[in-house]
Image (cartoon, rainbow, N blue to C red; front, top):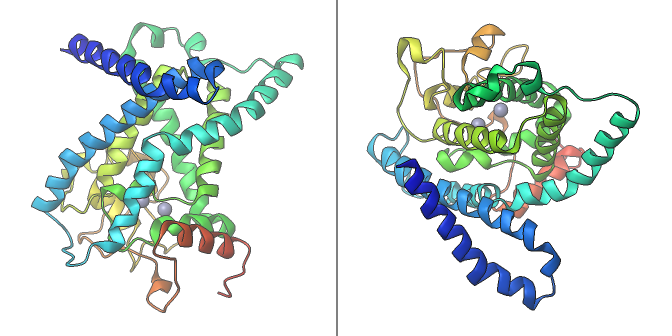
Length: 316
Ligand SMILES: [Zn+2]
Ligand SMILES: [Zn+2]
């Protein structure tokens, strides 16, 4: 079955590249980018299949057991743009092109100074023998660092001005996962690239982990009445667990300025004392939206208002 899927995918990849991408490259004089474009086409197709699968599975689930019902869904729609820009690779590609020279430079300088970044697979050879063990290990490590990145996004006031865009969605759906400020996405990309440099995540594992965590994180934003039970709730982040993180009424309280920060594994919050297992499925949003603070409706107005909050120019 898996072989059949990978063969069909390779055919689709080759067909798309030869019929659509390559002629365009030749036409506009970018023949030298042949190899990179071939890889980018693969990532785009994987992203496209991912988006179609998420939509085909999560949209019916949302219709079946919604937490909230909206007559007018227009506020939810902008998140589709965020998801497509991120998942189809446009934003990741942009930051990859932007960050690669910087990290190559950093890596080169470290090596020249005799500092060879450690490689997890060399330190723990067992990881090379099992693809599943290796994927789970990298997922755990990347998720641990994402937990702390997310805590800092709430803890530091300046960083919160950017992250607030993610929390300003009052019609939260599975598309909301990628609703982030561009500057925030740049920081996340740098954070993950730095981690890659630190432990040497192989590209295939990086892609696998991104796809798995992406699916779990999309589901955790879904407008569905789903909890993961008395044991499961301590292991994986459920739509209920993450909705509590977005709770308008109490989602930003306490010394950590929030709760339930984990992205994939809920036990990080249990371990670091930030888990809240409320009973209800609360309404989402930021309290100051109720007193009229505007976070924008369209993509660009949300981005622009984020910059204004960041430089303290929105007068709040
Ligand atoms: Zn948050
Ligand atoms: Zn969220």
